[in-house]
Amino acid sequence: MSRRLIIGPFNRVEGDLEVSLDIAAGRVASAQVCSSLYRGFEQLLVGKHPLDALVIVPRICGICSVSQSAAAAAALADATGLRMPANGRLASQLILGCENLADHLTHFYLFFMPDFAREGYRGRSWHAQAEKRFKANVGEALREVLPARADWLRLMGYLAGKWPHSLALQPGGTTRAVTATEKVRLLTVLREFRAFLTETVFGDTLENVTALHSADQLAAWAQGRPADFPRFLAIADDLGLGHIGRATDSFLSYGAYGQPGGAGDGGPHLFARGVWQAAALPFQEALIREDVTHAWLVGERPLHPRQGETRPLVGEFAERPDAYTWCKAPRYDAGVIETGALARQVVAGQPLLRALVAANGGSVLARVVARLFEIALVVPAMEGWVRALAPGDAFCNQWQLPDQASAVGLVEAARGALGHWLRIERGKIARYQIIAPTTWNFSPRDAAGVPGALEQALVGLPVGEGESVPLAVQHVVRSFDPCMVCTVH
Image (cartoon, rainbow, N blue to C red):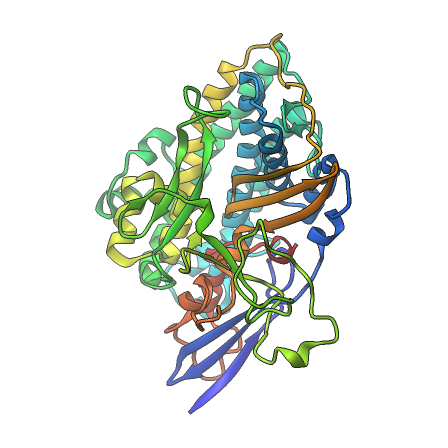
């Protein structure tokens, strides 16, 4: 006997999310993911001065506003042909890295781990400890994590003046120069955050963590280690989280944190740009299309964002009876793609994450491990970027915006590939299109009826009789770390 189960709104999610599940024989047979709030930022931008984008797009979201700023600044830089000075590039990467790592930490402790304190897991050997440590609002980890996160965000104050919605990121670099004294303060913040990660999150040095290259090494390392990441690994092993949540195993990364010595503002990336589909492939921006077949949006055929538009079917829902979301369906080379920390690690060739994907695909376990590994990899890199800052040298180059231009800004937000496509005509914004990470991951079906990444990842999950909020579904949805306000922007 089949039935439909609607879960929503999801709690502990930025924005509005509803998931409809068709259940047959105690398992999810198909899923539809609904982004239920239309916002219209792309329309707000049309007719504005191009620099207004730097003020408007950070307001898309309060927890990843820097990512939106970075993408807008990158698009404007592309329009002008600007190159940042070395200080500007380093400071921009530090600002983006600060937000991305804060998001990873927040996701792990506040959004993901509290699910293991649920009553449905009472009786498991680890439940009492998970409840004591991670229960929402009262878990003892909060007393350690929230101050550590607040201290970490002091980086943003030194570099960007404020967070969220800073105007520090500009096409030519950053607006706030770092003094020699502030450079010492930045290193102090990084040292204190490293100590928190070493003692509380990993129970080991960051370098020892990132030296783990196989699932067997990871399991042996975690055995009996009194820290929160090893605690998660023990829970994941007991629940089989390495075997659920698989989508397409096709991954996309725009490349994160450019390093000196290449084209543009930094050629080689700390995390490489590319696509992974059982093998590494070069990324081709021209292969992106957006499909609106199942969205409450006007459109007849898939379009590249440079030609795309975002117009709601106001009062015309009956004309598209198969629509069920405000989210478009981005596709890469006509295929469903996954993006995020796992995609960055796999594309970049991180041995452990490639091994996890080779064994069981993109799973709940792999996505969480990728986020925490990214913290361990980026903090040492940030230490190097701070040391490379040269107080007294320029942090921002001047620019002149053209009256006509077509440009793109591609960055990696915490949740994955974020793109801004901009067209300027007569000195004004004529078109502005955004594809956010959760738009990729939570996309609906396309014209061919192919489900998006999350919709595929939910199929096959167990659902108990009378279970209104299946625990496995919760874990899979949260493993993608959805940000719904960015999804439809």
